[in-house]
Every structure is written in structure tokens, then in C-alpha cells.
Amino acid sequence: MVGASCLMPATALAQEASIEDRLDRLEALVSGLVERLDAQQDIDAQQQADIAATADLVMAETTQMRGEQADLAAQVETVSEEQDRDGFGIGNTRFTLGGYVKLDALSLRTSGGQLPDGSITRDFLIPGAIPVGGEASGWDTDFSARQTRVTFGTSTDVGTGTPLRSHIEIDFMVTPGGDERISNSYEPRLRQAYLTYGDWLLGQTWSTFQNVGALPESMDFIGTTPGTVFDRQPMVRYTNGGLQVAVEQPETVVTTPTGGRLLAGDDTMPDVVVRYNYAGDGVSLTAAGIVRSLNIADDDFGMGDDSALGYGLSLSGRIGIGERDDFRFMGTVGDGLGRYIGLNIVNDAALDLDGNLDPIFTYSGFAAFRHFWDDNLRSTIAGSYFRADNPVMLTGNQVTDESWNAFVNLVYSPVSRLDVGIEYMYAERQLEDGRSGNLQKIQLSTRYAF
Image 1 (cartoon, rainbow, N blue to C red):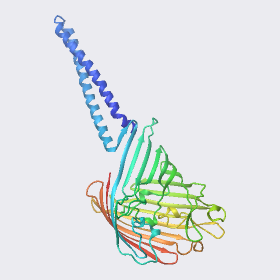
Image 2 (image 1 turned 180 degrees about the vertical axis):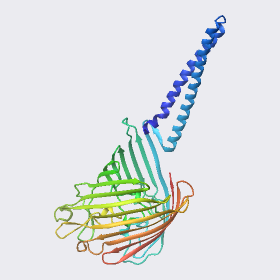
Image 3 (image 1 turned 60 degrees about the vertical axis):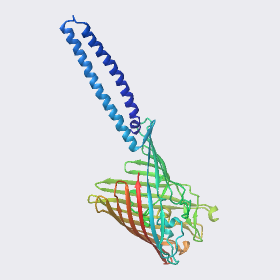
Image 4 (image 1 turned 45 degrees about the horizontal axis):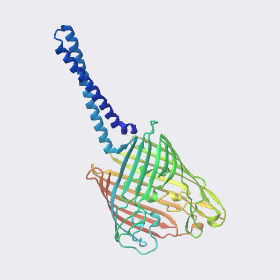
């Protein structure tokens, strides 16, 4: 259907040209009939009546065709307006461009140490990076437009009645570039790149284990980070109604015997996700399960090869309250889920003295309530929590035991697609040895979506 709409102007113009040719022929016929009436004065009345009736029929058809021509012209104009608004067509492909421009102005302080200037740990909340054990910092202020995002999409009519679509998305977060001293230039990064055809998706996008639709509105990049499943990666996904099944990129993250972090890179089986989505009566719910094969090889630690089973379950959703308010939530539990939760707060597994993998059990979740004060003003209050059952004898006591955060914001939309918001956030991290550190942040954001 998308391809057909892209071809509509060309088809309509061709039909319009055909009508013009027919009109010219009909008008020539009418002129000939009139000349015959004038020339044949001796023709009987009945013949004149027949000729006149024929002329009337021809003129009626001409008038009808003039109307069809006007309708086609209007149709061409309408389709052109839709293409201007929703993209443009070249051949049988439609192209679209979207995204947003965002400015963040934030000031933060930490109780357990100074976050480095220019570090991504000052751009948004990364729970595992909240300093612990150091001197309290002052309030540090940063301005950034790095979250600005551009999306590019295509939809092609391949002649089967099912369009072939693609989606590419970039922003400038978590990338190197110019410093705050002169240029503030940052390199673009690939966020998403995938194609869809019918029930199939192939490429890089949000993990099927994550429900993006449940995330609350926040000025921070993620918001309820400690309690959130958050991961983008390449995959092959099949969707049938509310059911989704995907095989996704594997990656085992291990805590070494010295307490460090190792990306083993020896994975042989993809992560497998099964998910079901339900929507109805102002409620949308998602249940997802994941199974993982965690792997290391002898060349990682020189202690032989080993594998372990990782798994997890997550329930999330959004529940409408009243006309516009909503409640959002997520709860996740599992063994060996480290890199999927809270931006890898803890690792997937630890290594015991025999060279065997010991998956780390975690549970996490968040809850958020959004209220509309009026058509242009709204607020969200939210909180999230994470806890890990670390095998301390293997990981040591300097790893994260738990983390939580809470925030409240106020967002004003003076015009369509423009949001101005202010938010206060408090976050805390505690180590296995009992020490803790906190982070406070005040953030003002302006975002224009196009």
C-alpha cells in the first residue's frame, strides 16, 4: 500500500492526460454536429432532434469527464501533501526522516568521589559508576546536546503486497569527540539499524527482552536505570500477533578472580527470547523470558573451558488511569542476566577456583506514575531498585550489592512537539562491604521532535 501511494501521483497524471485527449476528440465531434445542423437546413425536424440529442449526450459526457479531471487533480494535490508530511517517494520507495533536537543542562553532586569532567558518567545515570569511598564533590554543571537523534526510514513496494522496510538511527551519546573547552563535537554512533518484512525483523534494535513502552518519561537518558532491562543488539526476530521469538547476540561478561571484568568472546549459542504482548482496555502488558548459554574458553584464564545456563523472566506494562494518567512498571528476576540490567551493574557470572562459571542471581524493578495537570503540563514520579546475590568469595566485597534511585519531574509543552522539563533525581549505590555513595542531580531539558 505504501508503494501504491508513492506511485499515485504519476498514475493520476497519466489518467489526467488521457482525459484531455478524450475531451479534445469529443469537442471536435460536437463542433462537427453543429456544423451539420447549420449546413443541412432542409433536414427534417426528427433528424435535427436526433442530432441535437446526440450533441447533448456528448456535452454531458464532456462535463462528467471535466469533473473526473478535477477530482484527479485534487487527488494528485492531496497525495503530494501527504508525501511532503510523511516523506517523499522515488520510484516504488518512500523515504522518511525524523528524530529530535535536545539540550540538557544539568548540575550534579556525589557523596563518595568526583566524577571526571567530560565523562559519560556525568551525562546520565550509570548506577555502577556512582562513586563510593571518596570525598564529596561540589555541584558540577554541564550543558550538552549529545542526545540529539536522527532517524531515517524507507518503505519499498516489492510487488508482493507486503512492504520491505528499513530503519536507521544515530545519536551522539557515549562517543569521543571535542572537549567542552572549544568545540563540544562528538562522533555519531549507530543506535539502531534493521529491516522488516512481514513478520520478520533482522538487524540491530532493542532486545526483545526489554519493553521500551513501559519506560517512564524522564529528562535523564533512561530514568529508572537500576531497575530497567536495557540492551540494544543484533538479532533475528519473528512476530505473530502478540507472540515474539528472537535469537540475539550473545556476550558473556565475567568477574575475574582479581575482581576485574572480562568479555570472554567465546559464545557459541545465541541468547533466545520469547515474549508475549497484550493490549486492551487501556492496559498493555508484556511477559518475556530469556535463556542464555554463558561460555569461557581456556585461553581466557588458562583454566579450561566451561559453560553455564543463564535465564530470566520479566513482567512489565502500562496501565491507564482516568483519561490520561498512567502507571508503569517492570519486574525482572534471573540468573546470569548481568549485562541486561541497569547498564551492566554487575556481571553475568563469576569464576570459581576450579575454573567454573557461577552465574550471578539478580532481581530488579521500577514503578512510575504520570499525571497530567492540564493539556500542556504533566509530571512523573518514579523509583527503581536493583539487588545482586554476589558470590562474594569469588567476586570480592568491592562489587555492587544494591542500587536504587528516585526522581520527580515537571514537563511543559507550549506547542506541539516541543517539551521543556525540569527534574530532580537521587540515586544510591552500596557495595558488598557495606559502604555506599549517592548522587543528586537537577536537570533542565528542552526537546523538539521533528
